Length: 285
Ligand code: HXC
Image (cartoon, rainbow, N blue to C red; front, side):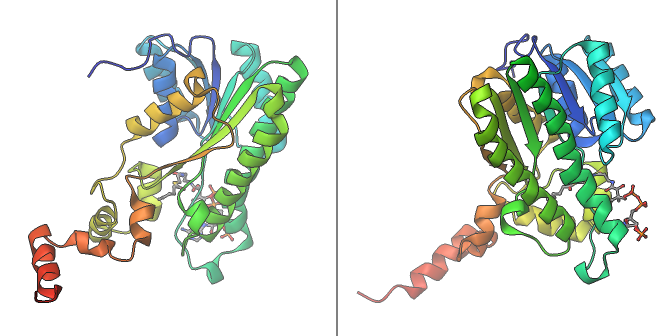
């Protein structure tokens, strides 16, 4: 398939991707770099940063990797200093870095709660504030895309701190869309359903049976692919979506809606069987 995006669509951007060395962050970093953006990725571990940067460069893109724990405000401030020293003013941010694990809420320790809330909510805020301050001071536009999740709206059992933090990210997105909009700063979020990345799967999918059940919940009957999310991210970061602000785009193959519809479970049966069932229930003429 031809690329629907112009190859230089993001050429004027210096884009930061948190947690950009692995998973969805990596997919988005590679995609935006392929469309001309200079990319700076961060993460705690240097090895994934180095390999992602090497791959982006090998493909002809421009990338830097700087290790940074987004839970630490001073480290985040130092990261942005360094990123701008290396590649000039940052113009866009993807808040992607996320922590999560399955646990009974009553068992979660304070440290476990912190690990998730500080990475997801504090980390997104620290990075967003660093960008906002710069853009307001310089009177330049900017765009922030945060990765939320569908259960930021619905809540979910067994991932309480993640749900709380992602709901906070959505509130941040909507609040700052209003507060900073007149300065030409846009903030939006994507709410993905399950995407099979190593980090998420290792911690959130206990086995193959459960994986199959998860797939059956999705009308598309498949998980999303990181490249599909990256395509949406490009749209939301670029001027193609210049009038979109404060929006949360659900990107889940219809999973959340399908979970709410009273009779949607019938779709798991063969269609002919369901039709016969309906016919049988029809009153005689
Ligand atoms: C209970 C756990 C735990 C688990 C860690 N902790 N894993 N508690 N169950 N499975 C507790 C530890 O015991 C400790 O508390 C505290 O968390 C901190 O753990 P550390 O080992 O010190 O490591 P740290 O690196 O700080 O945090 C661990 C981590 C994080 C939260 C697991 O490394 C992480 O999430 N990495 C994965 C990154 C990733 O792939 N993210 C994608 C998420 S996908 P104590 O009290 O013992 O000191 C996602 C999408 C959801 O969120 C949407 C799906 C539909």
